[in-house]
Image 1 (cartoon, rainbow, N blue to C red):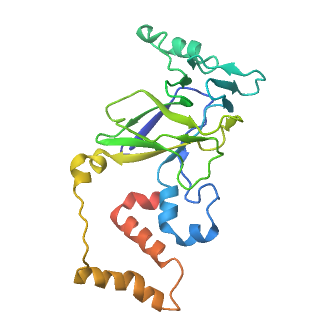
Image 2 (image 1 turned 60 degrees about the vertical axis):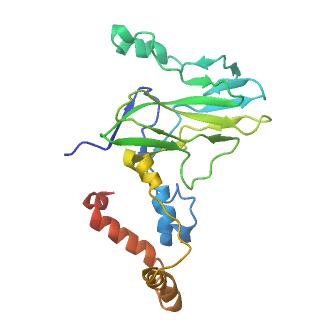
Image 3 (image 1 turned 90 degrees about the vertical axis):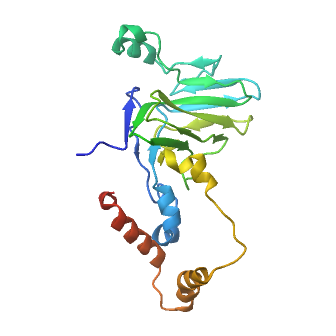
Length: 252
């Protein structure tokens, strides 16, 4: 069996394991989009869902951040970071002597107002020349009250805590991160995809070539002129091309 493209290491045992993102966005996509829109379903299913390791409530009063783990009743001030409950001792018991005391924090208040770093309880290692794009789950409505910053981590070279940065968008009410609801999406990205040479290789044209008109007719005008055309023809074609190019895709 070949090596996986990514290997997640779960250090917080309470955390739910990452899982393949669902093409229906956990059933929230409209039925018509799920059946016929390959663009939406491919985006929704591209990557792995990451879940918060605990039922967590967070509150920003416009200046300070407070947190409430699990079923606790008391709001705890975050100054400036906090460990996951009982994790530091478990880490020290498992780690070699040189790493005792090096447990990563669970929550860290960042210098920017209303911003928070959240550790997923995971570490990750990807195959050579691959990284992970960490972002909000695609096409899945989030609870509100916060937004996530996106980042690409070169996890083939850097091996450390897999975290994300959160920015509060309200200060009048708490937000909740549920352990059974996807919080983050990790998407595999080859380094070549975002290299300067790749992103510089673009052009803009104000003219259509003959071949462009032919393709437009084949993909847009002709299908729309056929009143008996089947629904979802584009989606079917996309899946066939994907499976033809990547035999592993048939296993997904």
